[in-house]
Length: 223
Image 1 (cartoon, rainbow, N blue to C red):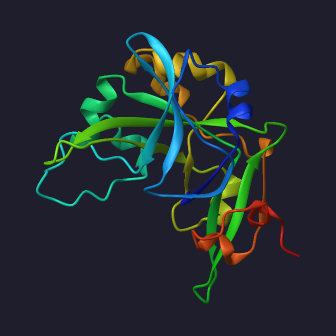
Image 2 (cartoon, one colour; image 1 turned 135 degrees about the vertical axis):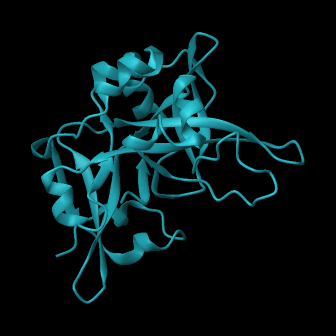
């Protein structure tokens, strides 16, 4: 399961993902955790825009009396079936979260969780398919949040993360516009398992387990 993200700097992202209105402000991060903010591209009033969203979807229909935790991921089977996601999907509230890579964990027989860093071959930045929504609290605070869409894992990641057997839906570069602007019935086919031969991964140190660490050393291979 994808629990942490690596976000490149804004200049790199805007070379990969062109948006009309660049409202987002961010810099390179090596350890973005759930409930933190991530850059996301979406469509608003017919124009693409780059915004910052909370990672962990809180659907608009969430009971205000509850303390919403937010879901960082949603399985592909649930995006148009689960009550909290169906209206989001049908309303076309899709976005793209640009990353340089992400982490997954492998559980040993002894219960130890070994982190692995995952990236793509020859793509310094790539887009993850996501959905977003807007939740209003009792105090009229607006929380815009997102969840990554998960698809069946390829052989490379299934071998690492045997507990989940899922991976984020990675979009081809030429599918960005269709994902953001297409109709729900036409874009589901874009959510495919990414080929294992176009990905690389290596084990990293345990510091990524702690949010107080956020520097390039986190993605270095361990011997």
